[in-house]
Image 1 (spheres, rainbow, N blue to C red):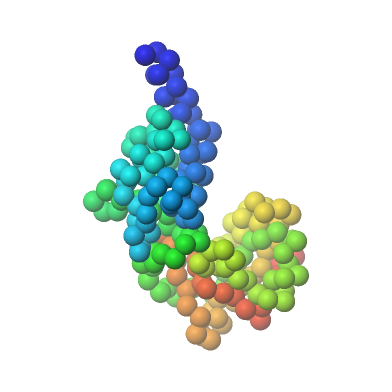
Image 2 (image 1 turned 135 degrees about the horizontal axis):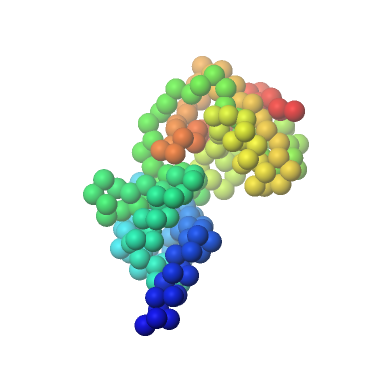
Length: 193
């Protein structure tokens, strides 16, 4: 019994929760089948099914741990449904879902952070969503640089969002403040040095 209590505390340790959060991100954005669940067309997963699926890998995982992950996630990756029975990732999906984001007027400029090794391709082809549904953009240069650093030596691009919008491109803003659009052609980009 004491051993079970100790294991529960270990599972709730911050680094353990971070690991579970990454696993949950994989499930809710890319591969719900790894824990035997499905997402509805808006990306929602049944909370009990998700807990049971993750619980096969992490036996002490429960609703309290799930709520702790969502509450403490610095990037606010997840949202609960109004009735508290479902959960979804706010953006970043590689599987086709509609997270019901309204079309939103962007600010004049946005930023995109990436790794320097991708700049030749971006300069030639613009920003493409790659394996995701949308290109992710940041409101400020510092956030973009932080995002770029996750992929290597960072490079930051300034995106002329106002001009894109005037030219007919559509923008969305996710629940956690990430700006999204389908593509950013190279003519709207300027490398920040």
